[in-house]
Image 1 (cartoon, rainbow, N blue to C red):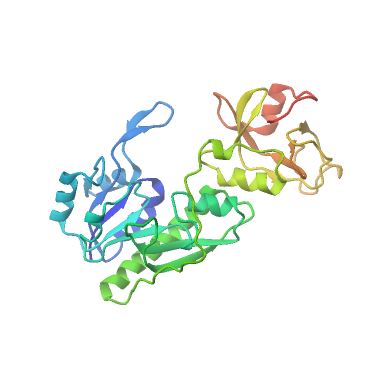
Image 2 (spheres, helix red, strand yellow):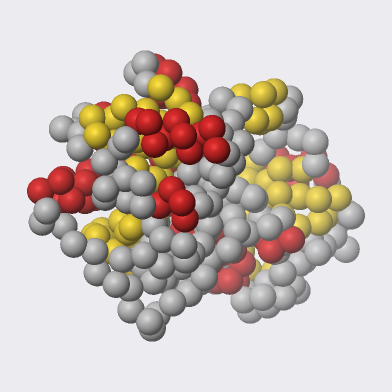
Length: 319
């Protein structure tokens, strides 16, 4: 098929690469316009735009898909299908039926679970054991279109959203190509989503990922992993913001009050696996060990190095 690929961040690259290596003809890409990025806020093109440039592909970067000039350009290309991975903007109804096979979205959940912008983060946050990716045809509703295919993926106990999304991006890329193959041959037919099992996954804000140390330890663990790498879970220490990387549950540790910070080993002394003493923080029902933290204005660092630098005192608390 003659396709135009729509996507923006790095997570879309495995799908674009898979399509370029397939029998389908990628004639152009649609991506978000250049935007400020990084600490210096330098104007930067999207990862998909960069990859398209490497392959000499025409690139459409509308400020909005409602732009009449963009709509005219897409109509002139006459794609058979527009595969979509994390494009980042709503597609107006006037464009949805323009390609014969529509816009086929790769979504990183098992629909109808976790419809919305942050499905992987919500799957980790709520302790799902299994997730996956789905291909479906875009329609006016939020991730409501008929599903063409799915792949499943087990969520590991130490998975961050970033690590899980990397795996889903790879397996999902193969699913997307297989879906387009099936549409081209006429063997792939969309199946309406069931009306039960629907859950929503809105974008997590910075306020959403502030750590509540009175929550159970496994809830703190899931929140931090869900927010890694973005937007980054955080707390305050001595009234300054402190980002927190993935933690480890420490059931052998002496009890600590919620938010209480301490250094030292658990009651069992040296661990058999050779873990270092570590920095421990109390939660609502147990203790977690910090791995890496990021104080305001500094880079991410080992929690033990941070603790030595701040010289922990008995009254110190994360809040």
